[in-house]
Length: 250
Picture 1 (cartoon, helix red, strand yellow):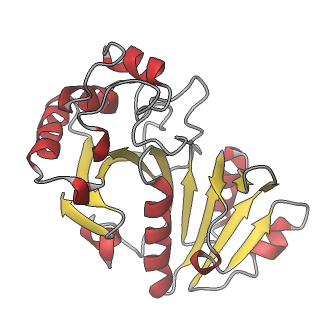
Picture 2 (picture 1 turned 60 degrees about the horizontal axis):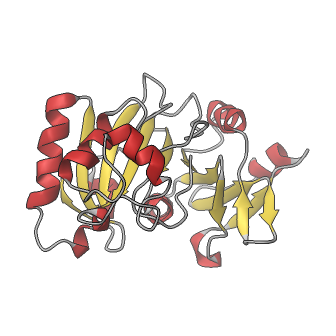
């Protein structure tokens, strides 16, 4: 069952999962949705910001928020994936997100077994720091999945490699063009202004260090794990490959 099983996530629990950070959020979201679909779960996929329009084979129905949205969502059946947005942005073919309060309401309605929501964007970069109003996380979030792409390691902390590099440097204490190493990534993870900014206090927090398939070995990400564990034992870390739908270390 891929990442879902390897992360010991209970498919029979009812979850509101918010994916934040950079380096593979959408891939992980649809990996989870696809696995849940195979076991007959009713899944809602959405965003509070924007996501690229998914491929048709990734979902069963697309609903754009309107006055009859609830009635349409009530028709969703077990073993299906429903995508929800406010509309489609014509310029970049992205699905426009819904308000976080809307996501909370839908979770409370118990219409879906799992709700998966992206809470920020990263412009295709593998690492980022959140802006002032980011991430946009529903208050009822039960699990926050914070993603970082391991291919950011060794690159320079600048706008070429980091989404909002100035904020990244402010959060981590780095200087522009410093090499991104394990300690900087660990600081991004544990900082109150970093990866898990705005996450509700009672939400579980899990870091997914993605793109492990590009690493020659897992010693470097394991070092990140050790640093974070010393700072905050409430944050769990997994080393994954969304491309392979696989967990290397947990």
